[in-house]
Amino acid sequence: MKSDLFASEHLAEAAMVPGMTLQNAKSVKYAVNGEMHARQGSMVAFRGNLQFEHKSQGLGGLLKRAVTGEGLALMAVRGQGEAWFAHEAQNCFIVEIEQGDSLTVNGRNVLCFDATLHYEIKTVKGAGMTGGGLFNSLFTGYGKLALMCEGTPIVIPVTPEAPVFVDTDAVVGWSAQLQTSLHRSQSFGSMMRGGSGEAVQLRLDGNGFVVVRPSEATPQKAAN
Image: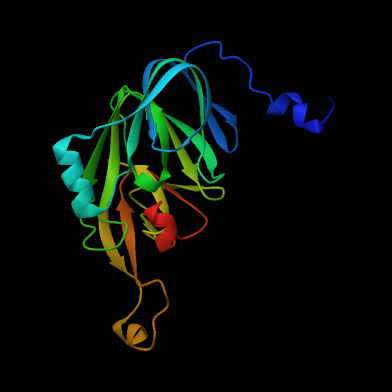
């Protein structure tokens, strides 16, 4: 049988070492030798001896999710084999977190991660009661984290001389050491006349980076 479908860039080669790699721009391949964690329902294929089980986040994690709406339902993948993960054909990116690093991420942008990473729902300091900007998922420890983004993300450096302002419906994540606060970018008079659609942003100060997607999350997308 002949087809461009069978070109080498589409074929899944056997993994040489355990861990996470990009299969292509829309999916992540994970060679499992023990345990890893992933978004529930994100597995699209696997081979080998693997079990997929609900990943408990403890009573505290469940209560935070219930109150905040932030976070994501996780599964633990255990055994030996290879699994492929994807979600709604979103673009995938791998971030390697080293010991001492910390990254805060919107839960809707998390695809899968190494079991060596610690995951916790944290309050975004100074963010007030804005939709999507009050609670985020904090990753610490060491290992690889696969993020997904609808479209090609924009990575913006943050420096003390140049704070960055981001829409909370578009932000993917940022360096956890950055200071956060709310910024109002339109006058009360403008709001009374119908507004600009850009009333409040999240302000980031310090040294680091912020990742934003080239679209704002709709209520339906934010819930997935």
